Length: 136
Image 1 (spheres, helix red, strand yellow):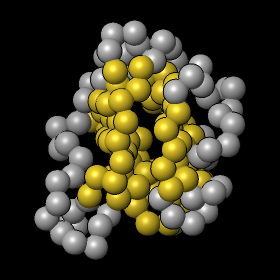
Image 2 (tube, one colour; image 1 turned 180 degrees about the horizontal axis):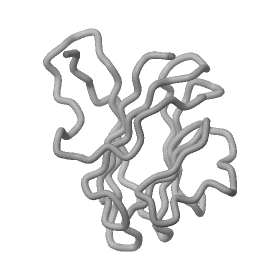
Image 3 (spheres, helix red, strand yellow; image 1 turned 90 degrees about the horizontal axis):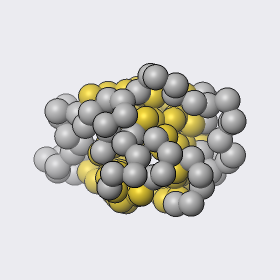
Image 4 (tube, one colour; image 1 turned 135 degrees about the horizontal axis):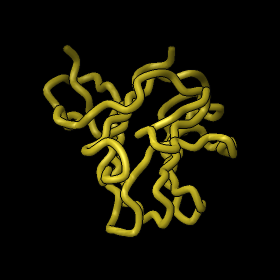
């Protein structure tokens, strides 16, 4: 099994209990997780998180060329495992009110495999690990 390497991370404060991850394009208004831990479309994932109770830790991992590097937390629960279209090869993480936004380049534009895992699925999620695999 290949290891992953952390390439970026951010601590984000949210007022609203939803964090968006995906393309740098506009997030569809209809994308809301309701009571589910996460919901997605072809470009974004909306993840339920705990709001107004501290920072949400987000770590971004990719597959490295060198094995044996620390990876995502194996005790986290996967809430999304699929693909996202990244129109400019960058992934954005931001709060629903668009007050805080973190953007990181992962490669060329295209479709990427993405796995999102959280420490506690639902309204108590305080940490998110995002693993990006090579283009699909």
